[in-house]
Length: 113
Length: 114
Image (cartoon, rainbow over all chains, first blue to last red; front, side):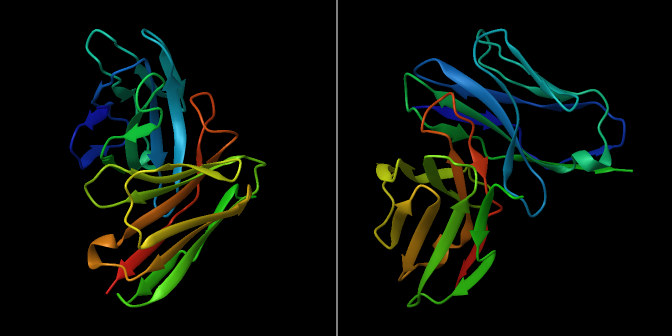
C-alpha cells in the first residue's frame, strides 16, 4: 500500500541555519506530493506541492523537488527563522492507488534565536 | 475569518460518556473529512463525506459515529470510548473529494478519555 516515511525529529536549529527534512514514499499509482505545516495550536496548512516528476514546489522560502528515481520529496530552506518552528508533514495523494491523502508521522522543528 | 472551525477545542470524557465534536466550514466546500492525530503516528483518515454522502469509512470502530447534515457541518458522535482513543481529532474540507482539491484543516479538538 501507499506510505510516507520522513525523518524522525525533533530537529533543533539556530536561526539562519540550513534546513533539510527528508521524505520518501511508496505508491502504487501516480502520486502527487505535498508538504503540510502545523503551527502550535493550529490545524495543518498546505505549504507546497508537486504533481509530477521533476516538479519543484516552493513557498515562503521552502522548496521540495519531486524525485521519481529516488521516490523522494525532501523539504529544504536556506535560512530558517524562529517563526518556522512547527511540525512538518510530508504527504501523498495517489490518484491511481488509495485515492486519499497519506501522511508521514511529522517532524517537529524548533528554531532558536 | 477562520475557514474551518471546530468545537470544543478540548474535551475530557469518561469511558461511559456520550459527547459530540462539531466542525463547521465557511468556504463553500462540498467534501469534509475527519482525521485522528495520535502522538508519533501518521494522521489517520477516519471518514469522508462528499456532497453529504459518506464515501469512506476506514475501518473505524462503531463507537465513533459521523453525521453530515449539510455540506457546511460535520459531527463526530462519541460513546463508550477507550483510553487509546485519546488524540487530536482534525476536521478538514475541500471543494470536492479528489486530487485537484486542497484540503483545509481546522485547529482540532484535543480529546482525553479517562
